[in-house]
Image (cartoon, rainbow, N blue to C red; front, side, top):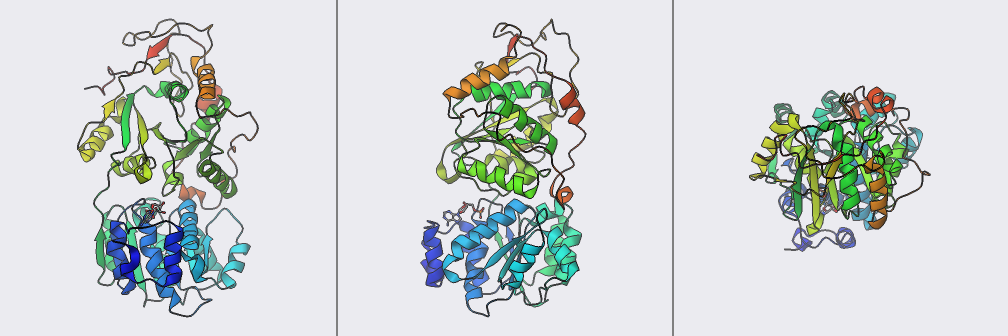
Length: 478
Ligand code: AMP
C-alpha cells in the first residue's frame, strides 16, 4: 500500500517522493492516521523503524492548516545527532511546504538559535539542556505549541533528563497533542506517559532484531588483545565502511587515534568533542572521507548512515537493546553487513541474554586466519597486563612467527589496508583530540572513567608470537 491512503497535501507527497519512500513502514501505517486525527500516541519503537517520518509527516500536514511564523511544534530528543537528524528529515520531507524548523542544542552559540527562532520557525527540535537554558533566559516562549514529541524517551531518562523534561512541560500549553516514543518502557516512562498522554493510541513495533542480512560473529578475546585482533581483522577483511563501538569516550578517542596511526582513515564520535568536531566526524563518515568511525553508544545512537559494511563491538554493549541497535547500523535497507563482537570472560552474562533475545547462538569465530599477537600491552581502559614476555600462555597455540620484534598489528594493518577499500591516510587531518567539554556534554555521555593514564603511559612492547585468536578456551565456544 502506498502513502496515497493518507491523503497528504501534494507538497508533502512531493517530500515523500524526494526521499524515495514508496511504502509506509508498519509504524507509519499505525501512527500516521492517529496523529492526523489529533490523537496522543504512545509509540514503542526504536530508531530504524521509520519512526521519524511517522510523526513528521502528519505534523507537517497539521501545520499546513494553521498560522505560520509561530513555534507550533516542539520535538525533544536526547542527543545532538538525533536532533540534527530529525531536523534534516523535516527539511527533506517538508521542503515544498515552506514550514521551517531549527535544531537547538548545547555546545554551540545561543544567539544564532535565538535569531532563527525569532525569525519565525514553526518547529523546534531540541535537546533538553539547551532548550531549558533558553527558557530560563526567556529568549522565546512556547505558548503556541500544539504538538509535542518526546523522542527516545527511555534514552532521555537514562541520561538523567527526566527532571528537565518535566520543567519543559511546564512551559507548554496543557491543550496540545503529545507523542511519546520510547524503545523500552521502564516504569518511570510509563508513569510519565500516564501523566502527560490523554487517552493515547498505542503503537507498538515488535522488538526488532538485527536483520537477516547481517552476519553476526563473536570473537572471544582477552581485553588486552582487542586492539591487535581488531587491526588484524581490518587488515584481512574487505571493509568499505566500519563503525566501531567502545564503552567510553576515552576508549573511542584513543582507539581512533591508534587506528589513524596505523594508516586508517579513522575518527571518533564521542561527547568530549566540540559540537563542530562531532558534526565533522559524522558528516565525514557519511561522505566516506572517514572509512572508520569509533563511537560511544550515546554519540552514535539514532544516527542513520547508509552503507556501513561492518559494525564492530570492540566492547560488548551493556544491554540487549544496545546490541540490537548497534548491529542494526549495518545491513540497512536489505544490504548485507557483518557485525563482529569482541567478548571476554566478563561478558558471558550479557552474551547469554543477547542470544536468548535473538533466539539463537551467535557464530563463534573459528577462522584461525585472524590472529592476535602477544602481547598487546596497551589495553584501552584497562591496566597493562603484567606477564612474562618470553612465554606464551599455555592455551594459545602459536600461529605465526617472529617479525623482527615488530608488532604485527600496525605493519600488517597498514599493508593490508592498502589492498582493501580502507585507504590509509597521512597524519594530516588527525582525529580531533579531547577538547573542552561542550555545555551539556556531561549529560550527553556516560562518564569516561580514568583511563588516560593506562592508555598513554604504557607503550606496546614488541613480541612476535602470533596466536590464534579463536580463544574458544576462554568460554565462548561452548
Ligand atoms: P528512522 O527510524 O526514522 O531513523 O528511519 C530509519 C530510516 O528509514 C531512515 O533512513 C529513513 O529515511 C528511512 N525511511 C523512513 N520511512 C521510510 C519508508 N516508508 N520507506 C523507506 N525508507 C524509509
